[in-house]
Length: 223
Image (cartoon, rainbow, N blue to C red):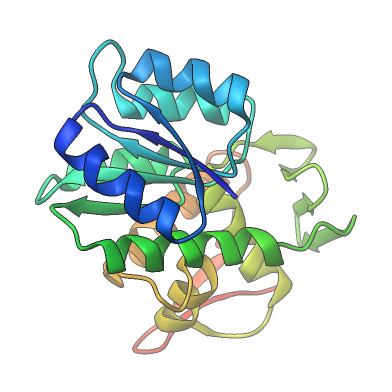
């Protein structure tokens, strides 16, 4: 497994690279956003560890450009307390984030959780339907009344979870485990944020309530 580390702080990269190598990962280091994007294209990494604050091009912009051509897992390094970086990063397609300063054990847990999710992703050609919504799990597209609805990667997998379990109430804990992994360090309030994103994007294209709140338990999508 190859990890691209995009980090301009030499102290952090000097600490990270040996630890990742010790865990058996091949590593590539970029020290600016632009260099990170170039190395992503030439090195074809299995995962990207991406700092938000970078010279030449910030991490959120690097992430957006990566997502234009790839679904490779990306974990963002954010400044502690900077919730806007976390929200913007997740909305741009990050798979997870970790706040600086962090312990190597926490980072490794996040890396392994993300890689497990990717490994177990169902790639079978399937069409899921729920009323006017239609999801093609091979092309990762969603349509409503023939119109394409554009979702971030996390939003897509959250909607997929609901459509695969239509008619079943899913708790916040079940959602966190399924989308962010059992070893997640995500606050459960992020679930409500992403439910809001889904509802808003669906409502922009088709009428009717699709994802309902079951008070005190979780959420359900009904056929």
